[in-house]
Image (cartoon, rainbow over all chains, first blue to last red; front, side, top):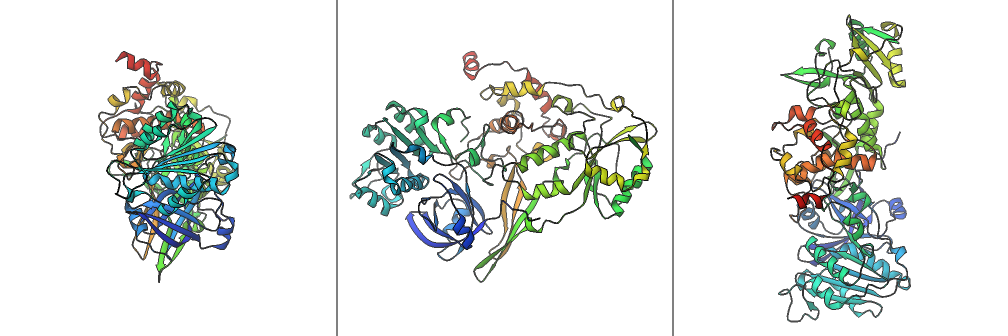
Length: 279
Length: 347
């Protein structure tokens, strides 16, 4: 009998390393095994367990779009033991990957709607997957707006893509940095994300809001959205509880009757309101 | 119905050992009793109420290597230990009915959705011979959580001690039958005897349905602060619990070779939920103690239709701060059904 070890990762070669911001890198990864590469599918919002053998596993979303085949990308900040070890890997080296895990952003249900993306800091990566997914199927959606903020200009990730998004006529990009984080050349807004959102006076009509960011940003952003008429079921976010197994067994991401790794990481604000505040 | 004498039981176990199977049974180490591999049936003990540590290790070891890795000239190769799991004939002897129920719960939990090969293989390989309880202590509360001193759930064979050093033998599964058939001559066919009068009297102390019902409204109740004041966060309750299944995954090794291990973990530890950013969704011992109780008595029933407790009482016996789960559950089962808002209004 052949037993499937759900904890055994795929081997992936690092194809490209991109320095995004101080301490933040993006890896483009290729499956070593051809049959895995051909059969691997995922959807926007899902995540994986990335590992450096000898250091352990770490959880991040898949930051590339499911519409881009042949590779996956992840973006991470060097912070703990595993991410520090990952940051030292170079193109050509091999790491482990388990996934895709978790639920998805129901992008297909959002056809013919306006999409409003609101991201803070290192939380653009989970949203980038959906943004590219939407841009690659642009005619599915009406207006697409992205509001992205970081502490400083330096901390903005995917700068090359922000340039590209800023130039596109089929979407609107608003970037902002926290007061004091600007440079003399800075052309974007200055202010915290919730404040800038309020100035934008977003229309809630036929609009889905997708919010990702640090807990404090989320806490102040939801009330602004509600003020402009967004109902809790129109607001989506993704939770980042600590995880180990990714498959609902290790118990770490349990919040109320929910396991973030299986029932999430994507939740509507309405679903969050039913959970104990342990995220 | 079959009976077996104590002497024949020892012969039976010896024959199991002689056939090459591994037998794990209660044995004394210092003043504590553990399930340990048996080499001599004479070293087994029969005069225990409950072992100190549960038999869950037989399905879910404290530390389990799941794979190993090796780097050669920059190339990494991985050995998948699930592929190397070999069928092993193992017999657990002397588990209490609560333990057998716990092993069943554990197996069900691990085999849901994506099945855990390690737990599954060990369960397939394990034959469980349990012993009904003829004695209990003040920490036992199996009858309050849907189990009982003579409950046969999860066992392959259940023995109940009666007079003249004899045991009633209940053969419950094919696995149990295979074992008995191998030494049929040691068992004596007899007319049906009721085991009830031989069983320990464990008075129900609370209703677990009531606990589950009250917990749905108890998240913001101040009871957690008070109940956890003495909690040291040592994790002993988790360690001895037969149902607790939370784990950590860690790598041990260097840049040449090593292993990826699964290790027991506990929701009582601050590190369990701590984010790298420093944010901790359960920052105090009170929130962690609440999680432990909520998970077992509210979340598991709601989510999996399983209760996370079998009433073995080990956590209460082992707690260095003398916290008593049975007493707390009793209190919870009588908690006023109030909303958090109502409680706030009282304060």
